Length: 135
Image 1: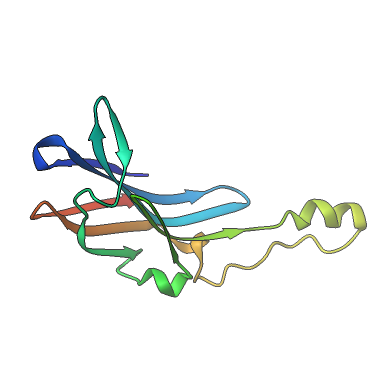
Image 2: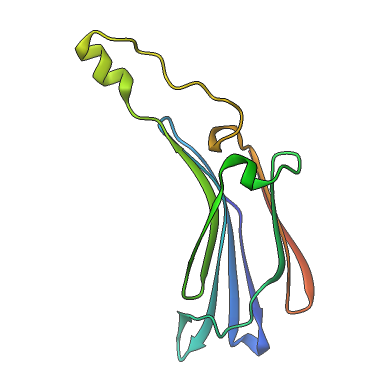
């Protein structure tokens, strides 16, 4: 995971961008997320009123489109996430008890298990930015 925090508007707004490239035995996730926040006294509060990143583009591996891996967006107040995930059901454990097959689901090369690199490019406060995660 790579993370970048950028201040704007004389430190009253901030953008926190994080790449996602998680590979556990039974769970894989790839993508990125960002949070836009505004300073309220001593704390940062999520808001859509803060300066937003522009021209946001994400690619997986060697420039592949995240949509080809099934990535979908999620949004909330001051929050955007684009990711895909793959959860392998622990059929091995269940099938050992039942006496059935113990193979895991094959990797077709087009889901979160295949993502090794995430690159996010965007413009924030009139400056081009790039953040990347490489496994």
